[in-house]
Image (cartoon, rainbow, N blue to C red; front, side, top):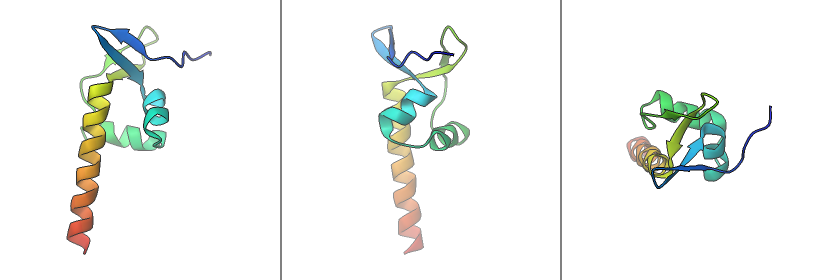
Length: 78
């Protein structure tokens, strides 16, 4: 099935699928899925194909939270 690589714009914001988030952030797909499981990415919309999509703002907040959690774990480990 062909995949549209361009983010969609709706309500003045860009929306990204999980695959696009992984490409955009340089993270593995499994990392993005773990952000969902851990509650870093919440309240997705669905695109016309039923895929979960998130705004760039949601992605940035999830990445920030993940970085903070990593820094906290490193401080505890040292």
